[in-house]
Length: 262
Length: 237
Image (cartoon, rainbow over all chains, first blue to last red; front, side, top):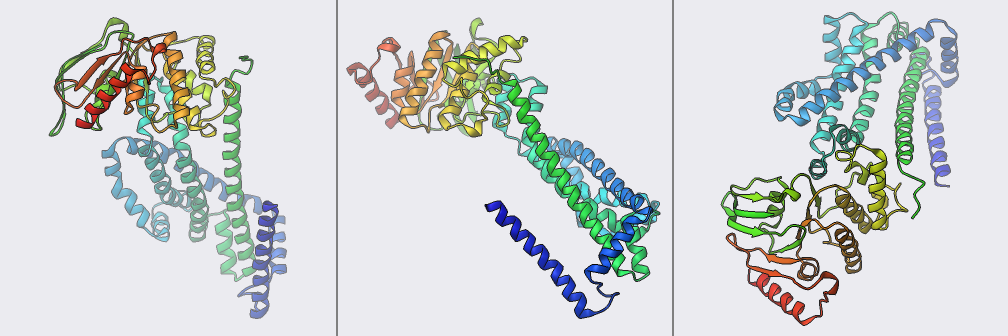
């Protein structure tokens, strides 16, 4: 019942958003300032029907995925080391603080001076996402329960068991929080960098070209696609987390002897 | 196990100063004392987690090697099932999975948890969690057992049922045990001897309890006398 109510509220608020859009468009009465829903849907359909559509979307997805995976891997490794060794954390602090404070646009513009247009989104997304994930992982390592660590030592846990049953489960919530935030940041930065650098393929590049030609309906269509990509990415990530949790519980259940009689 | 002329200080606080104590093998020594008088320090030195500043901790051959530690908190792995929490503590000593399974199941059955093997610590009550910790401590092949107020913060009924579970397991395989508690009754009911800390140089009070454990009754006049002396010592400490 609660779920139905929540979904109903969600549906009503979404419809309200569309209504505001449509009413706004009718009031402005300008296809350039704000086109209504039907022209945007039509533009979206024509976009999807054109062959470079898949190329553009795929290029953005690949860039986002590549930078996300690089962030996850590097931030995890460096975050664990920094969490464990204080002097590494101190040495990295100026870098992390600087990167966190630099405006996204500065990074993109600087990267555009240094790299080719295809690399800029990757580099910018990495620089923006890395500190977020790194901070979470470092915190996770620092917050590891010292009492449980002592227990593992006293009960002579093997290194692999300690890692698998104590360290990784304790780090999971930090890892998920860090990678979820990094992922949503990566989409935004990749598309922003594509807008500024206009690579051959990419959602952001198409958005920029449509804007130059004052095709607001196409800009909005690409924006809708960007929103959809972010939402799908989040959904896929949540599904992956759910699946991993489910798999772990199934494996745990398998490890428990069931033919035991009192 | 013997503490020989042990000294330990934390900055200006002298906890032990040439302190000696003898614990006969396969007996339980109950350790009571006011807070901050070195009960946990004594356990940590026995476990080898803390080195004394002076003197030494000598262990019998049968007490050497690994230790089992029962903490105030259960210290269970939240991501592991009840069964895995016990089985993991056996992996370093038993290579055979079948052997580990049989030992873990034996101890879990003895603490009455054979129906909860697949549950996670968060799904258990406080008493059940402490039972898992007890099963793990006994399943772990150690000849020295250290208990740091494991029955504290439990209601009296639960406390007695856990003490019973503990004693049943201990009688099955007696090990040299240091039992730290704040409760004089608990100390007298469980220990083969009771030692009250409070003076860095020597125990404030040391009493051998020569009544068999299963014949002890806290309303017995001798036991009541000891309890009164212990309480008096603690109050004056």
